[in-house]
Amino acid sequence: MSDALTDDGSDISPDDSQEDVMTPAELIAKLEEAWLNEKFSPELLENKSEVVECVMEQLTHMESNLQRVKKGDAKAGIHRMEIDRIRFVLSSYLRSRLQKIEKFFPHVLEKEKTRVDGEPSVLSPEEFAFAKEYYTNTETYLKAVALKRMPPNLQNVDLLKAVPEPCLDSFVFLRVKERQENILVEPETDDQREYVVDLEEGSQHLMRYRIIAPLVSSGAVHLI
Image 1 (cartoon, rainbow, N blue to C red):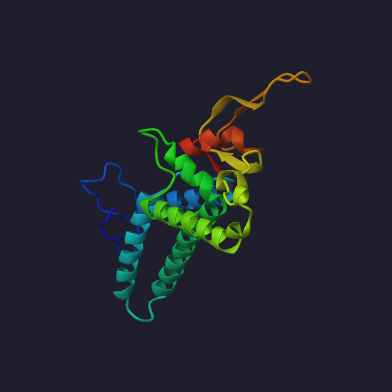
Image 2: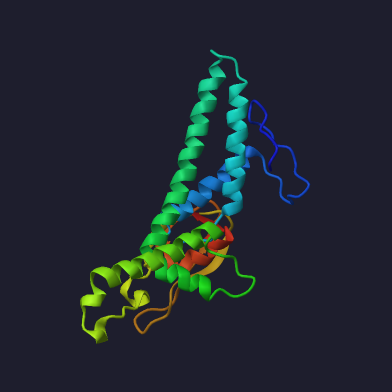
């Protein structure tokens, strides 16, 4: 994945240390899918640090290739627009993640703390350090401006209870990549029978996020 793009951006050389070899188009498609999933999901999703690192490497190679294009070549403007577009998607993806970390930081850290062995991490090492620092700074600020002036029995605050959790029952639009059968949309209640649907490949739906969250994680569907 670390080899340079060709001048026309059509190929990528294999890396012996990388099991899955992707073309630049496939790599950017993965970034765009991660970006849309992160943008539209109510919770912080699993980090895609490997994709981010590969895209940053490819941007460096694309910049290098652009320097070799002759002045006045029409390809230069097209390549520059594509580089700018990729940088925008990458920046927006990372910014979306930081905004969610700031909004839900106690719950993000609690989820990371209770993660079982073998379960993928939601946070990259850099994001984990940022979340811990943000938590510490928030506690310090609250104590300095408010809590120390409270009665002794009110000088402690549980940030897990004070900060709202992500609303997993919000509705999201999705497109199905792999056919899914017997998806439970609504559980059985006294007033109605359980509501089960099949999701056909390529179909689009508006559904409660909590229902399809595992499918987003597995890549069977993606948000739009």
